[in-house]
Image (tube, rainbow, N blue to C red; front, side):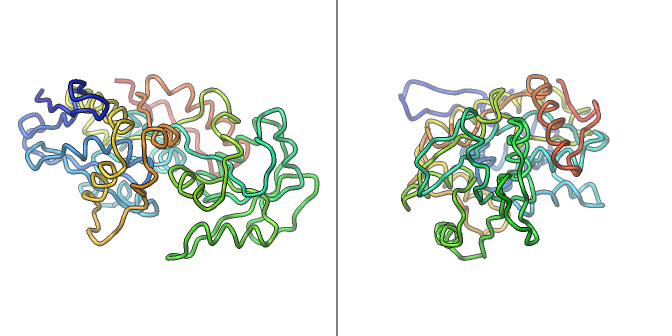
Length: 342
């Protein structure tokens, strides 16, 4: 298998090999498509995109998070992505039978943090109950981040109250309200407005959390730590069943590259990372949400960027989904065939 070498930022002599595994001769002349949402999942594959060439047999595409599920949903399956990064809950809901796609690994493992301008404490499992009676703004409360935070509260035996749809706040529960950010409105402006309306703190995702620190916010809780068990698979990589069956050796090599790409990302400048992601937007007029000024190795690590093969994270994935099912009826427990174990 042809390899390309990434020179790492820490030392010119230190290299990570095996990135960019896909070659035309090894993909039988086929162009394999890889889709991913903007943000932390794109950071996980940024090394591969940085070293992308026209003749390696692989095409990478970054899309807005709201569009990513469509890339595995076309009736004409030829239009669907060969490999796609999806939120775990979306992947299991759409593809959980394992008939058309299988999960080959997880690329991010939680990037949610609690932030506040006013909190005087850092929340741990010992004092998380002090949130009862408070109102917490949650990023994408109705989808994956909201499900993750609710699951975390459930694991800690804490009652919550979903205010979506105009429900009244409750003094004996943790009140959860959605963060709604109109297009073009700065997130900090939205959060400040919610503070003025009585919201006490927020659940947001890296790398946006670091950017918000410049606006006076501080981290007051790590959702991954509160969940326990070394976090949870948040974004997973799925592969077409036909790719799994017909190109097993190529796929194994590609997954090695994905793992090394994640390591590479922790050693690069923000500018290098943003350039790699921006250059691969399917919509060439779109602009990445990533901010080079706040990206560094620590922030990439806080974004949960790390690859684990499905064979490694299957048990952890199943455990998370079992708890998630108790708090969200729409959570799906996938079949055994959903997991590709190599």
